[in-house]
Image (cartoon, rainbow over all chains, first blue to last red; front, side):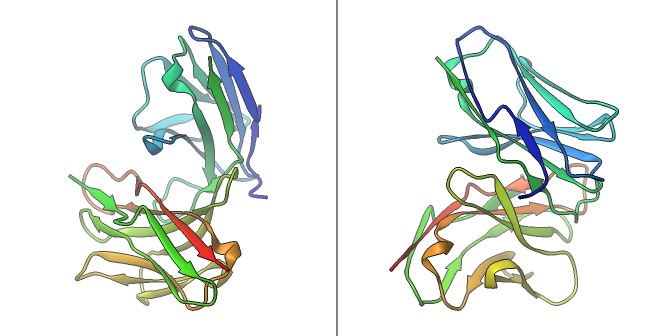
Length: 114
Length: 115
């Protein structure tokens, strides 16, 4: 158990809908990262937050947004969902923003868009 | 462009044999290098990292990796494979120089250890 929690574990929804994925980092970790993992594109970095502020953006679509709250939990909002958004979404946390800190991954949320 | 390559999509080894999962990179400066493992239906788990110092680093579950600066490689190794090592392995590299210091991930290598 990494100490990172994600809810829900599974999510099934329809095209055009909006969903929110939630992540609680390990106790003491200030950095939260979001990733999308699909069969055809592998692991894609989406966005990084540190202590409530956005630090880096990856391949995140404009339909997707995220935020990190004062209690350090984070939410990833996916809107106007398309079939291609079906994937595993992971969040990871690390103690700081330094590049040498390893990341601890949550169990993931499996999103299915029908 | 900065990149990480895991040249083998799949590696098959017999239980008890040594295993190697390859990773090469092209990034600026002196990189930080990581290996992660993903078991089926699980999140990724950190295995080991190289930041500085001894080129041979040891990690979890008996894995080790050797940083080779001249060959820009960071291959993951284990002397004797177990069936339970069967999983997806990811190499990740973070440049320590330049404007873009985001972690760069390889596409993963699926390791199958046969009994």
